[in-house]
Image 1 (cartoon, rainbow, N blue to C red):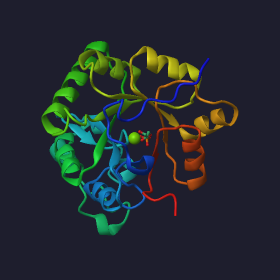
Image 2 (cartoon, rainbow, N blue to C red):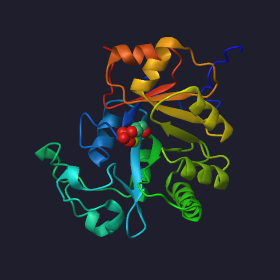
Image 3 (tube, rainbow, N blue to C red):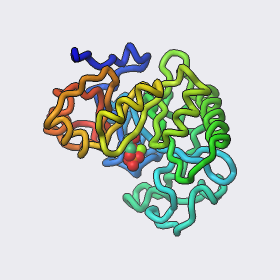
Image 4 (cartoon, rainbow, N blue to C red):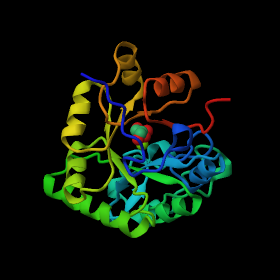
Length: 259
Ligand code: G3P
Ligand code: MG
């Protein structure tokens, strides 16, 4: 089969991430992940894109938070899904990283999107769903998320937000509701079948873990046109190898990998 180059960011109607780097959870090496400080750090370091994680909380809002529970941040084992927004927003989620970040609070999606626009950072919104949701709930979550993005991401018509998830059912619900929404399929354990699944579902990008992708690329070239992003890459030799092999972008906790 003739090897096709991956689609360009322009063909995907997305801006190009400067140096091919998407800041991971903001810029997680410099500030507590997924906080305002982390997004400011990414912008200050010259990045043009950030990835961050969201999930629904008990009062219905989408909050910017990676884990299923609060325990890593030192606030007990309660699930985010069982907490009200105003309780979540009273918690310090910065001092676990460094006492200088004691004022960092959990952001809602409504708050983070205008902040990123102000900072000129393009969003990759990763949707974390920890429960097995039924298809009706998936459709409702997709509709809610799509309308929030449309209401709060000012550049949605010219530079749309990229929505990604490990949840295939959520992404298919999102695609059904929003045919034009850029969608990234997150996988752990890269293989050609994952490309076939993403292509068949009309997703726009495939986001693969570093270990399995590097192992695959040691033996094979990628023949598909589907752009592939790799998480999480914090060293220059791996980043260079991935870019040489045609990987379109990497997620990194660091802004400067080369020099
Ligand atoms: O979206 C890429 C990457 O963030 C996926 O893994 O666990 O860091 O959300 P995780
Ligand atoms: Mg993530």
